[in-house]
Length: 420
Image 1 (tube, one colour):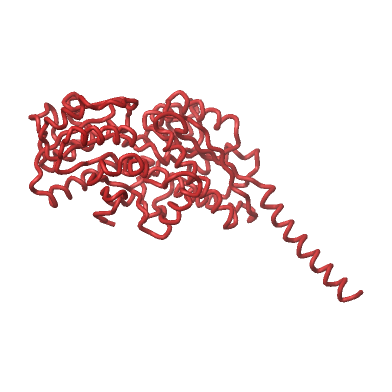
Image 2 (image 1 turned 30 degrees about the vertical axis):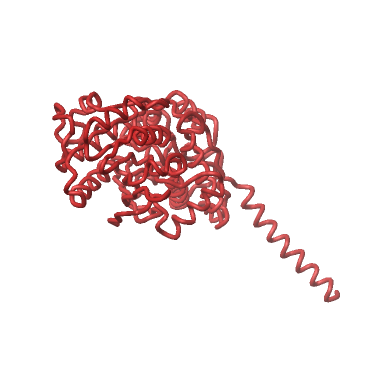
């Protein structure tokens, strides 16, 4: 046999092995699901989460995929569904994914109100034969209202702890702006996260650290979480998520004479309110915003009007990995923020859990492996976040994430305090 023939046979064998290896990866696919608001006023949140999730799944596959129980590798794949910011739609998506797909775990949804309703149709206590609720693990990236994961033992969240962040923020404001004494604010009353965080968390934390409501005492407001929250809402200048005219609300802010304005809303109405405040020449000494508005949507929509606003957030492009994820999100048509960046972390957590519990990718094992992944998520004590180590509260399915304070400066969110 000639040297040329041997060389050709060797090349053919090498190519066959490479093809076999590639085929093995292609033959086994592990599916996960994502869903969030890709329609409606908060559609940018779903667009951003899908963009980051797409990048994270691509990175998993670029680096070898998912290692299965038998040592082979599988490709990771996902499908992203539109659950809008609607409770019924989120429930419908969850039911469909759990019953009609072989996805092993889900990531979503966007809105806290939708999440609260959706989590309610899941089995409350794992293994309860009398509870026919959905038995499908969820690791939420966006819905941030405090305590949601306690609704079901199948639901987990990788979202920031707002009560802790705003407590630390108001302590920082008190120490760094001792001349500021009074507050006044408003929120989107028809958006669960906005008004819940405003009335139960933000105003409470401000009160706890000595700040006074500019228009007199609010009955029941003590500084304890959620104390007198209905009276807080009734005393505030509020609006709706779809509002486009804020003249009356802005006038109440201006007439309050408060040192600090609190605007607890998502980007669209945050910009609407800020623009109207500027038009009316309202001049607060400081602006405090909702976590969800520490986003590029605000910088794109009203950077000049937002100048000086301070917000606590669990994401900023301050590490090499965080900068890379931000760039990948942009490449996929979205932005990385405290909500969407968690989608990257979630995919990596899911990969870690799948490999630790030993999934097989076999269709006959889907329900068993969903339970294995649920148990694996519950067992986690720490995970790697994009800006630092994330610890977890096992019995609540919640995360305790590192955070920073950012301020709107010259068209960018700039870190002004980093307690990590």
